[in-house]
Length: 144
Image 1 (tube, rainbow, N blue to C red):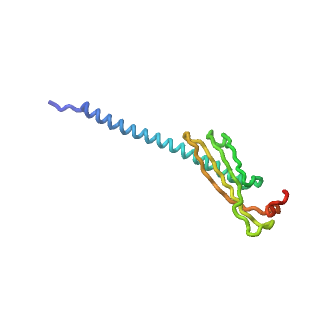
Image 2: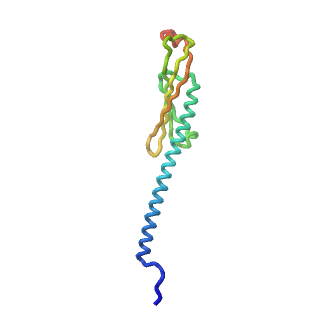
Image 3: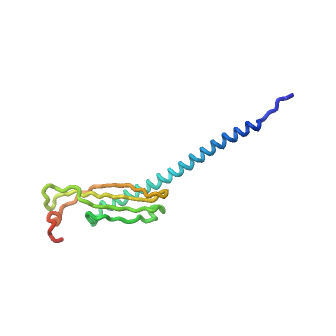
């Protein structure tokens, strides 16, 4: 009698089970990688928006001092991501003797927020810029 070739039913069931476990693990890994890629993409977009907004704030000398300002980003810039920002300009350092024409240092704090995966996320930047003191800066009681 010639030995039969092929697989038994038990061998087929074991092979199918092993393959199912491997495919399930692979699909789970792909789904996790896709979620992580979307989260990283949203974070990168928020970082770029924050850099853009901070550059604009650094050159805006009409920015009010000690008052928060903010707005939502244009959805065209965010790729449909709901995002916004809030900034505050404060005096960081003054010279020991305040005389018009001397330099002071201002701090701009910027928070950028966005909604990702049903959660509100945010990042914070800060930058510093010099400013020349004006007569109204050295005499706070003087009319502006």
